[in-house]
Image (cartoon, rainbow, N blue to C red):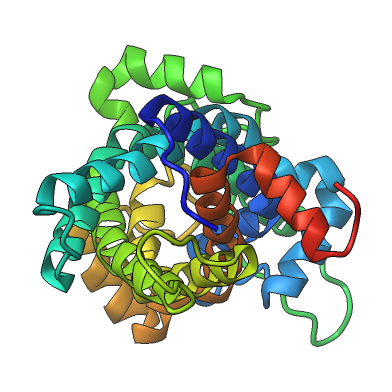
Length: 334
């Protein structure tokens, strides 16, 4: 089937819609990833991804798995639209007379896309992480108040946590907060730079991710294309997005751990403050070892794979055709 040319506004809408659908599907895994990355060695509340899932469901319920989803769903539309459309724009800019781009130019286009998206990604991640990590901090407070009477019982020693770095004074129970409250308080206290805390770490993660992801997806996707005018089969494009997303996500996971630690404002007992990317990387390496940089890598791969598989399909063919092809693939009537 010949590939249809889709206008830029349509691609922006498709990219935003793809982001919303993808985030809705995988957000609980993203929440688990954030909590696993933020817990320190010796203070593990969660032993594994499954343990974190079970404990979160028990303590916070089903909707607790979507804590922070509202800000993500609001900002993922422009974020994914900018990322996908910027990559298209830079590829077109670097192409000469319809010639196939070299790997170096594909990587340059991905670099441009990753750089553009952080305008939205940084404040989105900043707000999302505070809400996602609130449950972990509340669990630490609960453990610190539990009396352990059973012989041989061991509890993680933690003290009451400040409800948030920007709240006034300690509290016994964490105050329920929203993304809007966090944003208002950050803007009031620190100005616009408060929302862009961790900008350097976000660039360090998203630029290499895009440099790896877009060229890899393009080459995997072309494996089933008979010509440049033909579009790859629907399911092949989906798998190409999943595979490229997984590889890129795991490759930059150390940068994601650093970004998450720098942006987390709530701290438990014995949880260090970090003075920039280099200081954060050094302290993680010295105190927790090199494997700490792989915390949440499995979760991140599980989040990114379907997110970008869905995103790439919807971005290029639109929501309607995506659903039709999905039904046809499953043998259902559209």
